[in-house]
Amino acid sequence: MKEDAVKPAPLRVVLSGSWHGYDFSRIQAERAMLVSRGLEVLSPGDLSGIELDIAATKAAFVRLPNQKKSDAALIELDHLEAIDRADFLWVRAPGGRIGVSVAMEIGYAFQAGKLIFCVDRPEEEALRGLVMVVSDIDAAIIRVACGRFRT
Image 1 (cartoon, rainbow, N blue to C red):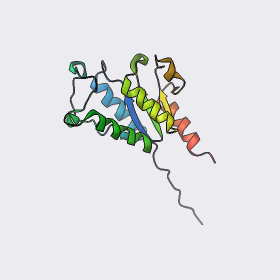
Image 2: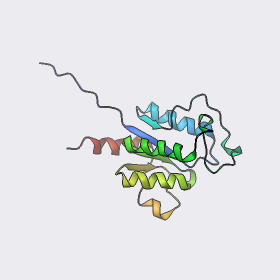
Image 3: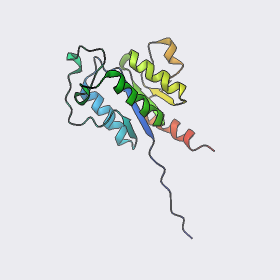
Image 4: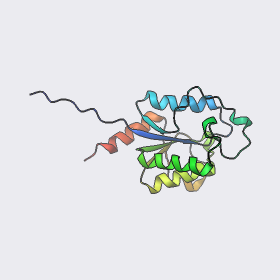
């Protein structure tokens, strides 16, 4: 008798990053790359078709155009709830720079027992022990998948 193969659910990820000084098209490309690897990106939502000049943004907290009327705390709470549902946190911190919001997200994810990965080693010494530095997303996926299917 042939058994039907059960395909595991895709890994779920939240993308966090210190976006100031970072071209928004690169953020869009980062999210698209995660999706192309078969990951379910829980937050941020779909970024396609959105135009945003982060360099011109003077606010400390970067909002997407559809979030301009939202309170920063509510936006952050949605992101933290997504971390609760995620298998891991993928942090983009160009040059190792991590802002206050991302530092909070890393601490939250760590306390929740989530794996946290980044490519650039955090400048902040206290965060280095909470984050696994990997060469790329594929290395993170392998680590998460191996842990996910252990008995």
